[in-house]
Length: 407
RNA sequence: GGGGGGAUACCAGAGCGGUCAAAUGGGGCAGACUGUAAAUCUGUUGGCUAAGCCUUCGGAGGUUCGAAUCCUCCUCCCCCCA
Image (cartoon, rainbow, N blue to C red; front, side, top):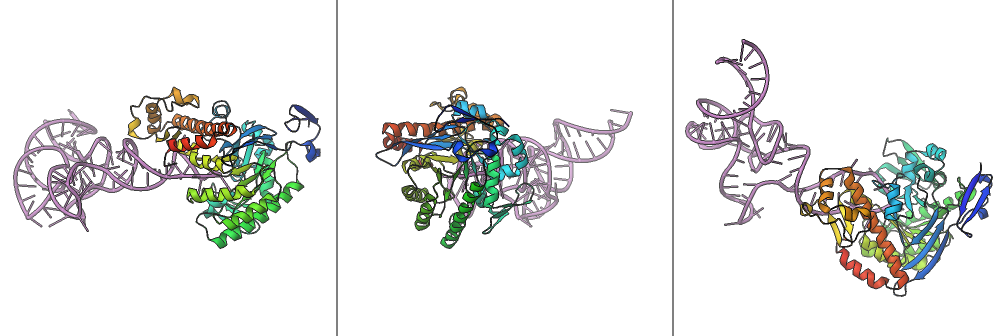
């Protein structure tokens, strides 16, 4: 098999011609590289550049969620050309069930399968341990899921999850963890944390024993857990820091705890995680959550809010949030958002978008999703600009006022 | 011309003497949604000076302590037979 790799690091345009991907050793593969460009002097906000085999990511970044290999209701051309998405997510549990590993392997990985040629990050199924709690059993070895589709039984061990993530072929792959619920008994959180840490060691071990399938390196991100207990979070952040991975994540937040508690945990964990590695806060959040966490030193975010809430008629705009179902938009022929960040904003009126929602038309979901993702990507891009300009803190304050209390 | 069925809230449609301001859908109005079992889910939907009262089940009258429910007439709609 003749393989061509675009290598971004350390020498950007170099093309390697290799005969067999199986013979690649790690030093020939493109390692992910993170460059910290600037840290805000009034907060801990950072602007950076993350380079992967599938392209660069300017941080802070928001990553649209594409659980099943698709960002719901949004086409990839809109995602990259109009919204400016630089990386998207996929989900191990969901892709494993459908289309399944044989199909993804035959396709040559998720990038080939869905034609998204920019970076991809796959979540490990750890969130499904939380969200599908009724359908699974957890023990030291791993998690047994009952498929939410047909009830069939599937065992996810850290090793199995790494194998699946190898087959999916994302640039960034998440360690298998347990996302604990909130509130959570401390004894449970402590025990769960121990399991998550031991699973992490097994993930690292498995990766060291296997090769990437498609000729580019995959970076494992471990996940800090510990619920909302400061001592557990500290212990976890220290443990994860010592693993020396390419980047680090914080999980188990935005599961119902008050925002202040989330910020407290993020603050603590960011003070421990290495500054020279990207920090990813999983599943967060509202626009204000994102701004607050950027200020605490987070570089990467993902959340279903812009897409799911968009499909349900909620629009995030720079003048606050609106429920497009509301009758007050019935004859409002003003643009969806005058601070247009995507083509839909000036082209369509609120009245038209409301009509689409009221009529159950698919285009409504598409427009709202494009708009919301456009807003989120604009928000982080703007944040980055202000970090580089040293105007982040005042801008954040202004934005917080504009976005309103509900977010 | 003869025979039969029906008219209930924005729409469709249950209810067939009191527990009915009236089931259930739809529609309307509002809310929720944070590493997606979600184009989903929840609440609400006659009026008011609001733990109470008032006005509603085609129209008018009647029976009854009490009527959306029973009777009479009227108006309109549908089906079958000529």
